[in-house]
Length: 167
Length: 171
Image (cartoon, rainbow over all chains, first blue to last red; front, side, top):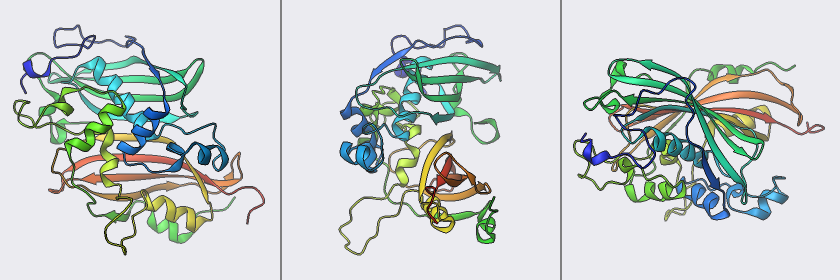
C-alpha cells in the first residue's frame, strides 16, 4: 500500500508519531445526535426495525423515549473514532461494546477513549483500548477495541494473514 | 430454576442456521453508511484502482449488514429471512417473547470488498438456566455469526449476547 495515498486526516496519528502507551487518552469526539443521523445509520446498515425510524412505535410499543441509535451505527461511530485517531493504515481487529442506555435524537454525546495496553510484535503494534459514549454524566455505551498499528513506513497490518493476524 | 431443554442442548456449539448470500457488496451502499457516521477513511472512499495494491474495502463494522435480506422482492412468494433467525427460534422454543441485546463483539478477518458475496452460519454458544430477570422469568444466551467469503475465507465473527424474558404472569 502506498503511504502517500493514505495520508492520515488532521489530528490522526502518523507513522512518525511516537508509539502509544498505556494511559494515553484519545482526543474527545463530540456528536450531536439527530433524528436524521439515527435513521440514516439504521437504513444504511439495512436495519428496518421500527425502533430506529418510527418515533410513535418506539414510544408507544417499545416504551422508549424516542427512536434509538442501532448497534450497527454505534459500531460505525466507534470504528470511525478509532481510525480517526490511528490513521487509515491501522487495521481494526476487534470491537466489543455494551449498550447500557439508549442514544436518542437531541443527545449531545461524547466519544472518549484510552489506550489500555500496547504489545510490540515487530511487524505491528497491537493496541488495546477502552472506549465510551457518554451523554453528560450518563454512560450510554462502554466498549473495548483491539487494533493493529503499523511500525514504520514499510510495515502494514493489512499484510498480516493466517496465524499472524490475531484479532 | 428451569434447565435447558434437550432439543436446545443439541444446538449448542453447532451451526443451527446457514444463510446463503442475499446480495452483492457494493461501494455505493457502504458509502451511505460512511456518511451516516461521518467516516472519511480513504480506504472506504477511494475509487477502485486508486489505492495502490489494495482495492477499497467496506467498513468492517458494516459486516453483518451484508447478510440482511431485502425487505421487498419482485417475487411475491419470497419471504424475507429474519435477521437473526436462531435468536427468534430460541425465543419461540423457550417461550420468551421479549429479547434485548446486552453486548456485541465484532472480530474482523479477511476484508470485504465490492463484488463479494458473503454467506453466514449462526452458532449457539451457550444458554443459561431460567432465572428471574428484572422484567420476568428469562434466560441469557449467546450466538456467534460466522461470515464467510465466496472462497470460504473467514470475513469475521459477530458474537451477540442476549437476555430474553416473558413478562411476569405470562405462562
